[in-house]
Image (cartoon, rainbow, N blue to C red):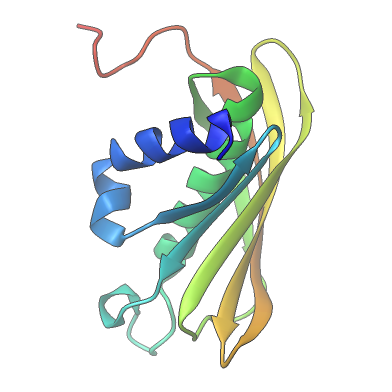
Length: 141
């Protein structure tokens, strides 16, 4: 297990919203992150597709995990997402990589796939700017 993966597991466990949804860290290495989320009925919108907010959350979190491997403590400054197809399936998998980084920010991309009947299909693509933060906001007053 890499040092990135062990630290990433600790960070994921410290995120109440990620725990609530059941997010899992699949892979974390320098410049790359992969998260997954088992889909449940309560993640669906009125037409039976996975709600865009669930997909957006996973992309955003995955972008930040990738950025953290080159920046350390960080948050999302901005991101955009394109949904390429309605989502029905068993599992979401987000794969993010760092495109470019400097001392205080990283530009990352993320592709989100759904696994349905053992096939993987692209459902969304996102790009974001991740910025370094100096302090842990949980301990600052």
